Amino acid sequence: MNVGALCNRALVTVGPGTSLSEAARLMCAQHVGAVVVTESPLDQPVAVGIITDRDITRAQLDRGSELSRMSSAEAMTRDPLVLCEDAGVEEALARMRARGVRRAPVATVHGMLVGVISTDDLIGELARELSALARLLHLQPLREALRHGSPAAARPQGTQA
Image 1 (cartoon, rainbow, N blue to C red):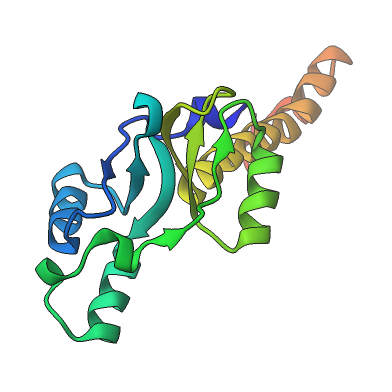
Image 2: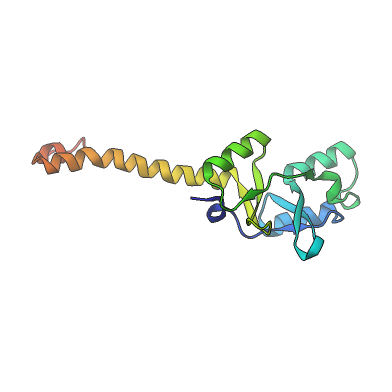
């Protein structure tokens, strides 16, 4: 599975001049934990930063001023990790771990922003894969017992005939 299939495509963006209070309102209204800060050279938005709910809290505490008086540029993490939508789960995890981030904008091979991937999205996919593996481990002995004609061995543990 690749990042493009797992990412949240409901991309929420703000400009660098957007107030932090507006960014926070957008995050609440859209039920997201981060917004991507973009600039639009040549009519194609480019991610220049990312703001998480934690960034907003820290900016307010560090500067002690009202959120409406601070711009997104003041609180954003600059030069965000941007993952290609074709990247696999392992690559995404490795790059996110190396940068120490929990969210990353996702773009096409041509640089067009298409979504945001989070560790929650990746953990969900890994959990589904582990669950499928666990079912295989559970079913294999049952199938083997049935194939070799041992119905007693095929019964789930704890049941009697």
